[in-house]
Image (cartoon, rainbow, N blue to C red; front, side):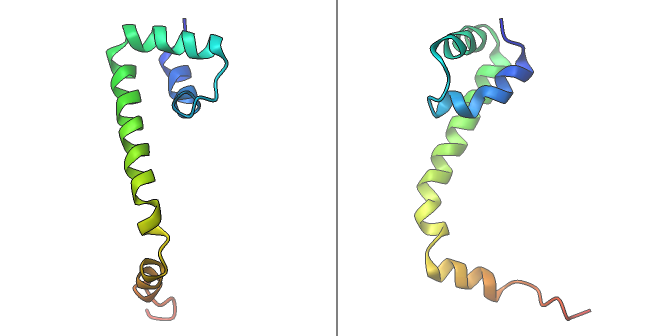
Length: 77
């Protein structure tokens, strides 16, 4: 069975469906038995979904210009 640190290492690939069937199966068994890893996977999934929903907003030229215009000037002390 996987250890919690192994689950954390594989979590993104699991959610992106980039694991072998054996790794995926092992991870599913672990998160079924470990409430902490289950919660971690749920939070990671939520975070990924939120970021994916914001991608268009984050890359719009208006937002990029807003960020660039609000960066501190390195020449100021």
